[in-house]
Length: 201
Image (tube, rainbow, N blue to C red; front, side, top):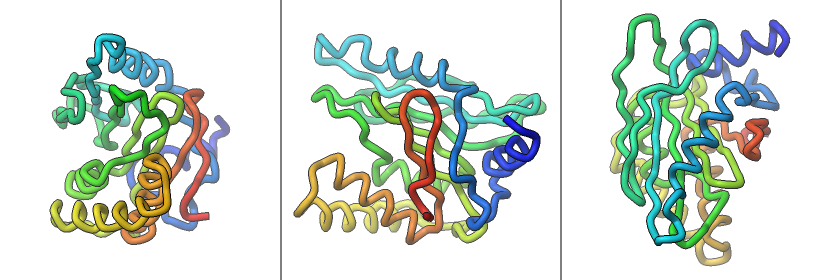
């Protein structure tokens, strides 16, 4: 990664990147092996009908993005640990989205988006089997929003899109709609960790 690219990536991680400066590509290859490992841990018992979400804290430490505080949850939720160690700067959270039904490539849920706002995350990353997604805060993202307000707005969008979209399409379009409303950047890509900007274009 070139020097300018590293500086831009750091600004995204620390919530200092303006909307107009969001990079067209987001390179997460430095943490991809760990993200893929946590995905495999999430589905290791799927043949027995059991999946478990995994989460980690995203921190900026020693001039790079790192995963720490790894925790295991249930089939549909996981509570990250937000405890920071010395010299760590808060970035956001990572978590997996396994489904017993086998759904893959499902972006952030209504609760995920609400939590990102309430916890003031700069970057949220989600692994859903075939895809990795990321939400990034910009200078226009509000500082404070009530959790339930965000969830209700997202559910209304999901209801709207579910009339004519598949489940993955409904969730994807809800994500774009919420990014437009709350001025997030939204990235998607595959498990190589190379993501492209989906919103704003």
